[in-house]
Image 1 (cartoon, rainbow, N blue to C red):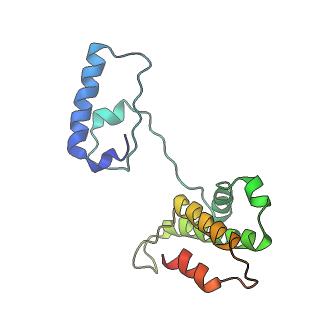
Image 2: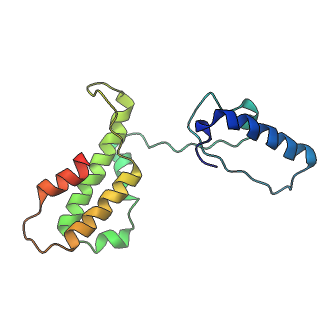
Image 3: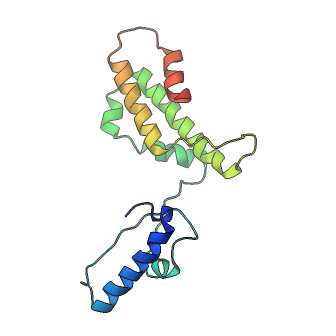
Length: 151
């Protein structure tokens, strides 16, 4: 079940059902996978019997850059044109900067600008599709800047 923090009323029902499963003797291999953001609406009973995992970005720009590049298969990256590799590096650098700047909060910014791993992957896919079909010698920087930055 994903995003259970969005339904705190149902989480109480979930806790009751889990108690009923435990009382009647559920199968020893029974597992329930849940995902949630930190929230007060998740009952303590659910949290106490859960194994909690977190997925936080690494600390530092270099570590974030390495993690960004790890999203792309090496074989796929190696067979690309040099221009595409350079733009992909720029996208990974932008993604790393956005992750790193989150620790400063709203200082200098008046709103959050998320650029998730999914956004990075989708931007790379758009880049591949946009430039692979193009035969132009000059890179369409204005188009790419609009696609990646404004949309």
